[in-house]
Image (cartoon, rainbow, N blue to C red; front, side, top):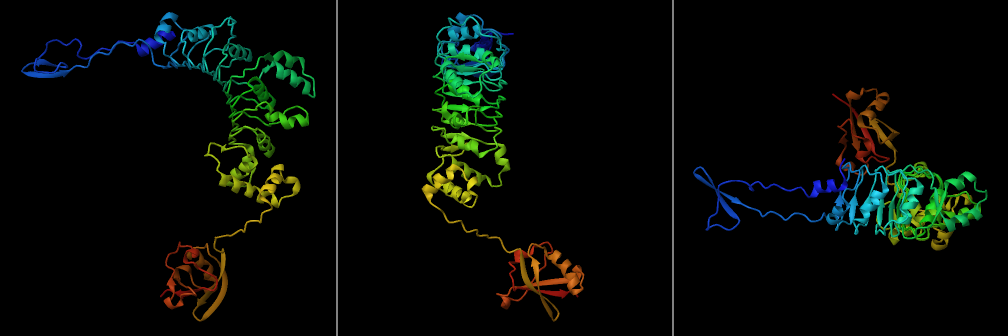
Length: 469
């Protein structure tokens, strides 16, 4: 398997062969520009244009992509330093790297690197001998699908002091077995039940990492919010948290009832973006908990079981969400919520709960009632035509008024009239006479599949039945 050095030399430093480099019988003519030559070919003269050979690369670009190259080692570090002096972003996803000391040596010899993608490398082994790791300016690290244990994650955090963005998606984490020293001590005092010895042994206490602003945690099978709270204590200045496809079942914790009211948001004082799409949340109380995140501005809550159980349109659901979330400015990836949309949503919310029993009204209802006052219910205006109208049917000299379904076709009506007049449908002609335009005479209803409402039939109009001759 190739080393990183071999892979980048293969991609960036192979010498190019030029088509005209070794062709014989090239003759220069003084009457042609310097970049033209003439080749004798039998009785013909062929002109060739030469493009100057580019000078060889001395270093690779700032973005170095070497994913899925079977790389298992670094190679000569001094050559890496010479060739990768400009590299700021390095993508090594889907390779065969195993040794963390090798990875840190790569970073040491790429002094400008700020972004590193190690997704799907076989780096699950413990990190060792990093106590004297070099100061590294890495700001973004992607470790999706690496299945690192939490001790390894902790060691990385302690050796990456300026890390601002971390991706830990698809690592099969069911628990967060890492917590901050000071916050954990506070939590222990608040617990209603003592911590078990097994929990103490499993969880690793460490220093908080205040520099981290963005955490991607998508696709991990975490169900309990107290696990997510540990991430909040570990990264106290987190601004963006992506928990898509995590089967979280509640935003409550296992603390006392009073503490549970605050614990959903207390460890995320700076959170501005939260993605909870595909969570297993089935209660409006979860939305009410999210409303307590004071800095939250961008929220995604698609594909919840709650939405499947609601008997309302997508627009009505969006209004109910906007009304419950006064701080959120962007919802489910849509545009910024404007003032008019918010006011409409809040007024619709008041009307929605106005006629419901008091015990079903959320606390937000009273808040909005103070803002908008008690509103009159909207008049339900239906623009649909009446389904049944009373029509006068005339056959020969006999007239009779009957209700008829206007969604019937002309042929359906003939079948129903067969018993009334004794004519087979295929022996029957129908004529429609509008009571308001009798002076224009009747109109033959010639099309058997045409529905009656398309004639604008109203109560009091007349249908004349005639026998075919």
